[in-house]
Image (cartoon, rainbow, N blue to C red):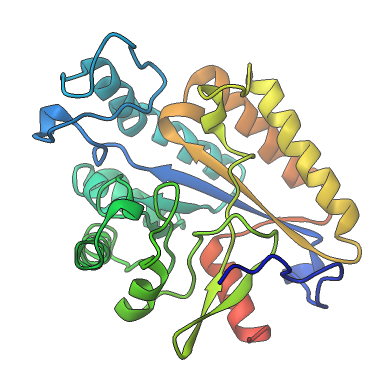
Length: 296
């Protein structure tokens, strides 16, 4: 059943760590190598990317798209991780199991540098198209794979685009998840009933996302993206005097990791570091904070 009311006009009384007015959740999506790819034996290739040639059909191997994904794993992700280190920013990695299997170096770097790795599927594919048994197995594979490559099991989950009607039930059935992010419905965490249990939702956002660099209408340059992120924080800072909020920022190594775009991330991290009332936090820490203090 849909909930169109939520917290209503007045958010409940709660606090963020260190009395922050805004918690910023940096999310680096790591999907490179798990996307549909004819060269990997898939019947069709990925058709979402920075350079998609209209004259090429999905059944033809697209070396252009393949190489842009490879840029993300070979170059862009490392540039983003170095920026995180420079500003002492800890992030959540939405990672696909197969992507980490194909780049174990970056898998270990994520946890070694203090970031959280959350489940983003075993493959970067549409969970909303899956039958329950298939989706159950894909969730199991993702958990086992991420635990193997990073040394830590995932405590959070986010599907590509949207979950199926069964996803949340299957996550609860799998067990071990403190939260999922398969909602865009709010700016603070909230609980939902799943069977006889409760699942914490740490909602995500698609507006503050670097994918709009190649999805129109979107960002025309780095400054436009960084200005939008700053404007978002400024709005939530004002509201945060009475109702602290959460801002999720979606990033991809193959997108924000390009030299000209990475300056947007650097400017935003500098702004967050120098702005009182703003705190950067991993999603698992947000979830643990909520579990400990704000039970359903």
